Amino acid sequence: MTMFHHSHLIFLPLLIMSTIIALSSTSWLIMWLSLETNLISFIPMISYPKTQFFSKSAMKYFLIQSSSSITFLFLTIFLASLPSLLLKLQPIITLIMIMKSGSAPFHHWFITITNNISWSSLLLLLTWQKIIPFLIISLMNTWMILPLAILNLIIGSTSGISTPSTRLIMTYSSLSHQGWMYSSMMFSDSLWMFYLMIYSMNFILCLLPFSLMNNTLLNNSLTPYSSKISLFISLMNLAGIPPLPGFIPKWIILEMIPAHFTPLSLILITSTTLSIFFYMQMTFTTLTLSSHNKPLTKSSLPTKISLYPYILMSSLLLFL
Image: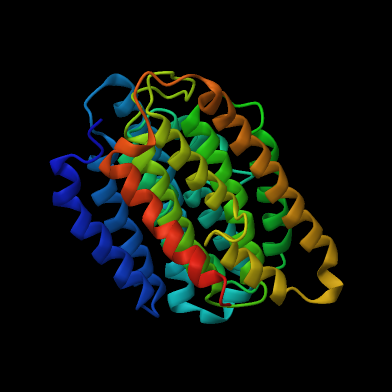
């Protein structure tokens, strides 16, 4: 399976540049401009390959993002003339960014798109495309962050249990991870960036064994057994099971939560437990099916690459 197309190489620098501009900007208008540049560069990437389903997904993504951006533009104009309005406009700005990022409760359009795009586009959509909206949300001092975190944790961890599609499972999983990032925003200004970085690395490593499987469901007896083991370890790392590196950001967030936020800690732990359940449910059938290829001693290069970071980072975690 070809993960990347030449169109990604053309528009990826523009995508990266728009995010860097947003991260270094203090102007609301510049942030809006970076959002638009980000949208323009991502649409051609999500449109590949040229099929009816991919084109519909790109059009739906464009309509949602552009309508949200128009509203955000009007708000930035108000803020440019009357900066004192920021406190009153914070909930509206937060809702706009929730819509743009595809977080719950405005996640239904996002779910329909992720099941009809390529793996490379899904990777960018679930990781890089979250940076600017999350940056703007983290600047908002609003009461909405806590219910937003809880809602994403509950919906993300419960919806993935009965989902057979790998793409949808990874999408619902991202909602649960977004709940962790929203939780971290209440106690730190930058911890969500660290969490997103670790999540992105883990998701990339999950895509390596996925790239060896040509179907969207994992019950394939032709998949090499070494790839199945690699996928299982990758998903357990994504779930945050110690001593795998995915546990580190979750551990830090739980350590930072004050005692009077104990119910939030319980929700975070419960959502992770449910995520572990559907990750194991997703890989159990694959692991128990007999593989027609001969196994672990002849592992493919992507499998070896995906396992080395876990061995290294898990070893480092033992010294923490």
